[in-house]
Length: 259
Image 1 (tube, rainbow, N blue to C red):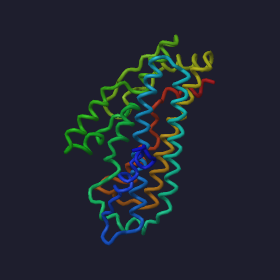
Image 2: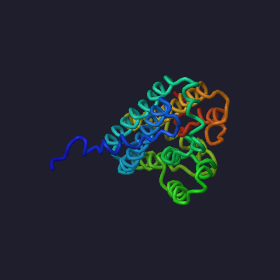
Image 3: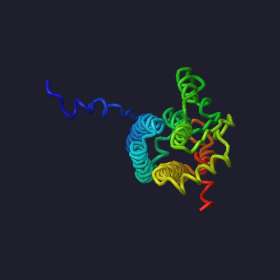
Image 4: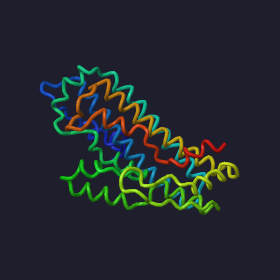
């Protein structure tokens, strides 16, 4: 039998996994499920692109690293724009099915935690949210041992003649402290190596895009549930607001004053 569009994409399976929990069924729960399932698909793609990006950087392949970063940035813009769709749902419409969500919460997104970990973040919540799931805890711990994007970038610049060796100084928060030595090398890169400088700027774009997504997410949550606790008993808006200004490449931001 010839391969068809539906079989290749497994459309029947894909469109059969939206299981509404509300009783009676609430119209807007379908939107809520599809949006979050779509987020998870994009998270999967970002992780897929991260694998390639690290290889591109380690191999010193500037063109491929730039191309991969631009794809990741486009995905990030799509993540942000999807918040617009969620915001078509009013607080009353969300609360019509919120009680049926039980202990489920966005904090439990394993793939987003993987993204954060590969960006260099380490937070107690990452493992705490999955303490009853041994396989997930082991997966996240394994990710924590992997080379981060920043470490791959440091290896990339070192092979290009700008020695940068990030050190893991922290166990909580961002694992790196800002480094005057690294910043000195980055200033030289920006002033003397245009191709490498472009990679630097694309990393800043990604950092900014991640912060933008966090901001849009927290404002969407705030306009939907206000100051209530999040589903699953999480701190909700108050916790999310603390994450909105977490730069993952602080050295690239610090050098802005040097030009």
